[in-house]
Length: 428
Ligand SMILES: Cc1ncc(COP(=O)(O)O)c(C=O)c1O
Image (tube, rainbow, N blue to C red; front, side, top):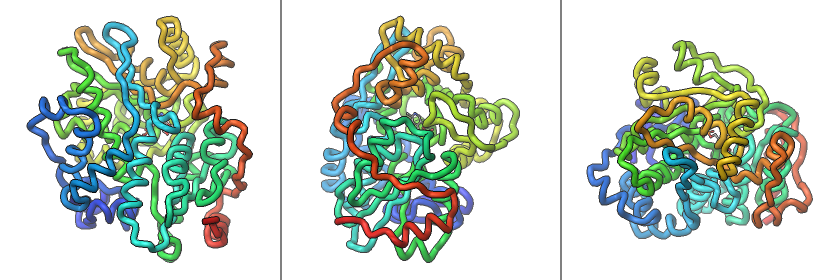
């Protein structure tokens, strides 16, 4: 597989090279030079999830991972389903929270961990990641205990749910959790700055597990095919993606470009409306994020937007023509949550944003699907406070809720981060 930087098409890399590097050397993001077009879609959709996923990943990645290794790796990664659950006769949820940390990030993080373990040469390897909530949990748990790899998770102090924090800040061992005095955008800025420090990158074998890593995004394309395989309706399929950093939407657009039968995508955001505003006006104005009840989408400068921009050749009109979009205030999100609950479906605030925007732009004769990206119990406080709904904790969360936190505070300052990284001696 050949990839190039979004900022410079002459900066090429292989799949494993791009996985290891995270960011391209010019600070751009890796994108495939060619997107394969699948002409046997009916056959692909007839396969089961694991067989189809191995086949699709093989078509993306090529010979860099031998087919038998890839098959085994896929079997170890995708050990849980992605069911489409009907909500009304023309609306369904794609539930992406049946993995170990109850969020869609399990797909990408577990695949990335397996690829890195496969590619490991014994040299030092430190995964550095920023999280607004679920990434940290998925990455920490996917890598926890993996020999030869250390994980550092940066998260905005006080801005992730207490249960999310328990999922990644209680691991210890080869996982270091740092609570940054600032917002998620500060965490992302620190990660970017660390990757720009070439000496540090070399010394620690720094690599990224954020949604900027191409391995995660390839894994995320797979559930769009799975959704198309499960939905039997012949009506045009319109898929709404709750978006923050825009990795999930990029993965969906890749799947669509490969031929997945998805008529149109809907960009759904909370009050952090940088992308909907751009689609409306043509002016892109990244800015500090504002806090909302769908906190994993509180992103004011979405890092993967660069990839989507590149996919459309930077053509605003083409993007505005291909996509639908909308945003939801917290009050509107709570109304959607209550309506869904009354219809017998319990969503989390992120899925509710996607559902609310979808309902506003779904046309007659279409089948709507929204991504349910996290288990509602992960946002139990919001559901209880704003709607009076008590969500029982599933087993995976019960297991972590009483574990002591082992995170450390960190100023939002590159010099402090560097000093801490260099001093860290992870336990084996
Ligand atoms: C539960 C949940 N939903 C949606 C999103 C947004 O996904 P993306 O950043 O790929 O747009 C996130 C991101 O962390 C998330 O955790």
